[in-house]
Image (cartoon, rainbow, N blue to C red; front, side, top):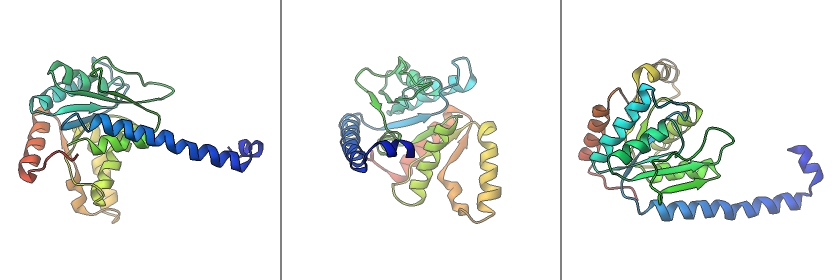
Length: 228
């Protein structure tokens, strides 16, 4: 990056940065305009690398179907793997199926189960993450990699710091998430980096019915309306 700066004047670099603001604004405006019309949804996160014959793919389909039956739509990252499973479940159940696609050099391509008028493309991860948080009534987090963890911890941080209202964050798969939860308890809490009450920010479950119970209990207790 520094070598590139030697060949360009600083004024040119600053001008390019300034023009990028308009592209970023365009992504925000496009996202807000489309997503503000979709109604209450739950986001499903997980690995793009999960194959259709994997148990977590099948479970994600089942979870998404049951969520739709409760009157919610489904939002995913729009790609393959668990994202595809979430959109597939919504499609099977006849519900709203949204895909927030991101331009990546590998893995990402639109899955075929997104509603044709609800597929959005993003160049910027941070814009896409705003859309997930703003237009979701809950996060269902299946096993995944860095991207899944990024979404999970950003949501928990925003709730912890009172930047957004609380909403259900549900981790699916105790065998997958157990080690992380143990580390949170035995390291983060023990060393005073978070408070014991921060464990209330998320739930860990293994079944679709448990996901539904948590969603229904939360919105019955808090009597919250969609957050947009």
